[in-house]
Length: 236
Image (cartoon, rainbow, N blue to C red):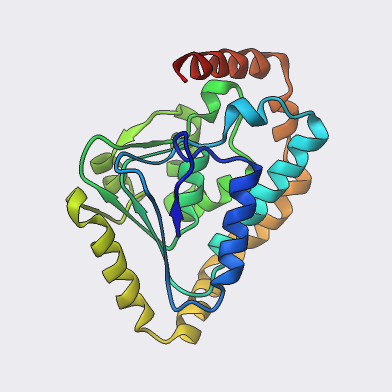
């Protein structure tokens, strides 16, 4: 499954719907690799010029659809490998975090959760995925600091599983997916269910408790988001 959406594979309602449809269409696949057509970026996150214009009800729908996609990635029964050719920031890193393993290309790619710089926390459901990956302290520092880190730093923290030469990224990711696909699918799925049961329970409770939209529509966040959108629009 290859992300191929100008600009920077930004995530909006259309891309979320397309990814959910693609996942449903490949539900029986022995393994999946999620990657990008770009050689420098996996995804820069949500399509802010679009989603920043949503009213509260429309934003609530988008958040619900994005959360559903994240859950479907995280609970995909077969092996799911994310092949990251470059930057995976904010919503882009959240998507990659739902894969079983993340393999990144050597180079200048950066990885981080920048939401705090916009005056918002990451959605609570998404935060549970990072708790699963990094533990409480690792998830807190990644989300609260808002720093983008290099591939080697991400590897050391456990955010990435491997870093390989850029020319080898796709083949290395496909090889790993094939290797994992050679295991018993039923046993693999059962281990994932056991390992992720507590995370999924917290994930499913998070929606009713999440103040994300209150932060998103607060005055401070609106000013920060509008300033970033203005810069992005000027660059475009």
